[in-house]
Length: 179
Image (cartoon, rainbow, N blue to C red):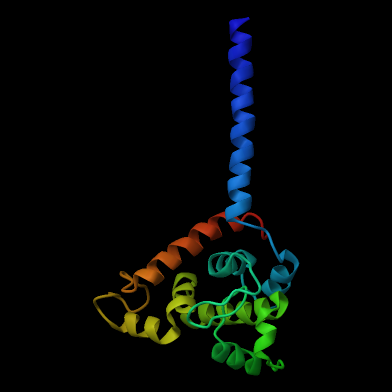
């Protein structure tokens, strides 16, 4: 009888633990805009999990959010960058559209794909999404940050280093959900 209660207690504990773990992941890694993400993943030849990871870290998938630096929407695009992307895609540009998830995800997905392809490296593309393409190019030329000019050995901006770690952590979760 004692063994039965121990097994029952363990079973109940594991069910409760599974529930709380599920809540943790649902809260920290929401699955929003999956259809749009998969569409732009195919259109721009980029892993949907990376798009979802950046959207999660940038805004937690919130459409209306605006940063103190003026970045807007799900993918947190600066209006000047978004206008450049819209012109590249031959899309109409209106800053108000950046608050619409579909439009923002399209522009952000293209830009992320562009950066990853430009640097031919996912991590460098992610760093450039946060710190800017010019900064990453400069870091790659500086022997303090890159020994070979192709990979970063040290990221001088703590914000970008933390950003990269958050996106990669998120990517490890999402990569099994965006196949």
